[in-house]
Length: 102
Image (cartoon, rainbow, N blue to C red):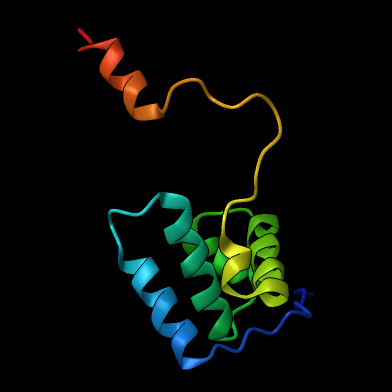
C-alpha cells in the first residue's frame, strides 16, 4: 500500500514563480534545482515514491524536503550551517591550485 504524505503542498503564485525560476537555473547548484523540482512535483499532488522515481532520488530525501518546505516554506530549502572546522580554501581556489590534470 503506497504511503500518503501528511504534508500537502499548496503553493502561492509567488512561491510557484520562485520555484520554477530555481528549477530552470542551470547556473544554480544541483541541490537547489532538485529541491525546487521536488516541491513543484509535490504541489502537483504526486507521492514521495513517484517524485523519487522521476528525479532518481531516495524516497527519504523527497520526504525530508517536502516536510521542511511545509514547515518553513522557501527558507526551509536553504542549506543549514554545518558543524566542524570552516574550510580554509573555497572550492574555486582549490581547483586553481591543483592545476591541469594529465
